Amino acid sequence: MDSMKLLNLLADDPRATVTDLADILGESEETVAAEKANLEQNKVICGYHTVINWDKTNVEHVDAFIGVSAKPERGTGYDKIAERIARFPEVASLYLMSGTSEFMVSINGKTMRDVADFVGEKLAPIEGVTATVTMFVLKKYKVNGITMDMEEDISDDRMIISA
Image (cartoon, rainbow, N blue to C red; front, side):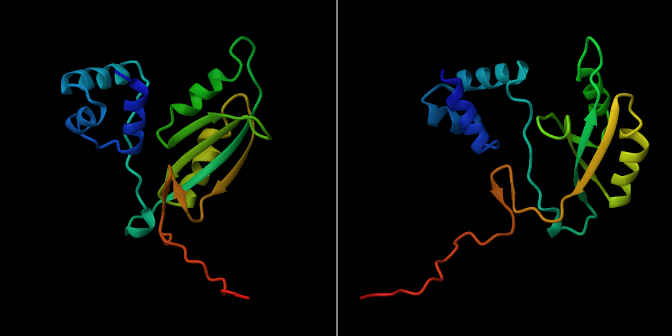
């Protein structure tokens, strides 16, 4: 079975049923289910996520990205610091980056105050963290390949000129 085709199908539609996947791939349902389970067990597939446009709900929700500068530790580099940061439930994503900050942390909170408290009380005091820069998401245009609240068909407003 072609695992890459399965992965691409699931990336496009994580809700696709095993029956539909088997039809598309020309494989048995048992083969597809076994390969999908194998990919999940080996952490190739790490989860299935729903993209929510929180602006269309009555729920207070704020997203922020925090650039974190850090000093690597002897023997472990940045891994120990990353493990400490990743343990916080507020942390949605954590990346080791090139550029001006060593880490980029994505967090979700109820209010900007929640985010500020997280940075000041939990993130900044971690040993090895030397600086933080917090950036609040003001508006989302596209998330994981999905456009948010944008017109699907953008028309061409140019005037037709003929000779």
